[in-house]
Image (cartoon, rainbow over all chains, first blue to last red; front, side, top):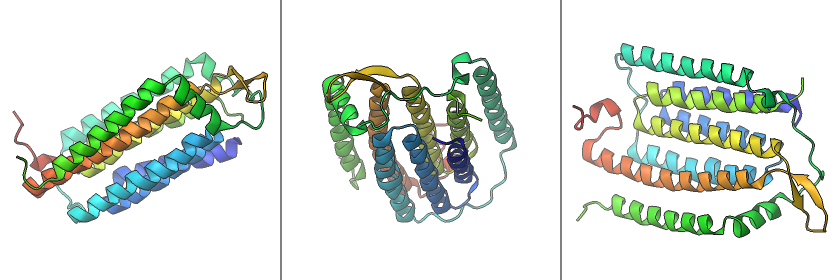
Length: 167
Length: 115
């Protein structure tokens, strides 16, 4: 991936990530999150992970965000009213986040392997989906089926939770 | 300026920090939930970057071997996306049930369990 494209998409992703946090209107937050996820999908494609990039667009930017927007509109949330800031909470949260970023900076500076460029692929055209599928169904077959059961349990759980009266 | 592994790790870490700040600072439970998704995606980005960085020899369909990304990491990302999708469905169902009971999505109004 060309560095210009990387910094463009990474910057856009981070910018819309910040917009998710600072927007007062939940719908605007959700739409910013969609753009952030789309830029992330572009970064995945740049890393030669085409399958994951497509899944990111379909599942995250598509299904999950539609679910979010649907719930926001179902609950009919208005723009948040300006409440008195909880000052200690903001100072504490800001300090913890700044500490995290500082730690990230120092860890990455000392991470020697990370200063190397990406090695070239052995083959220029990779059939990514085939490789992912082969790995998924041969090496990781059991976890795949466990995930299937998990999704079934989640479906049943959502139906039970959505009933008006729990018995 | 060439791209290094650290460029991706920095982008991933900053995205995680943004999600983290959102969870700590925002008071709307749906926004908090979105920020959780942001943090999950930041983890996915670093996994995919490591997968591309750490090439392993792999048998090709037409015979022979070539250096390919480590697909185990991409399978892990696939699983994370699946679990996150299930988690979103359950979480939003819980938020709807909560809203029915309390008519609010503001975490400071939901303090029955507060000591």
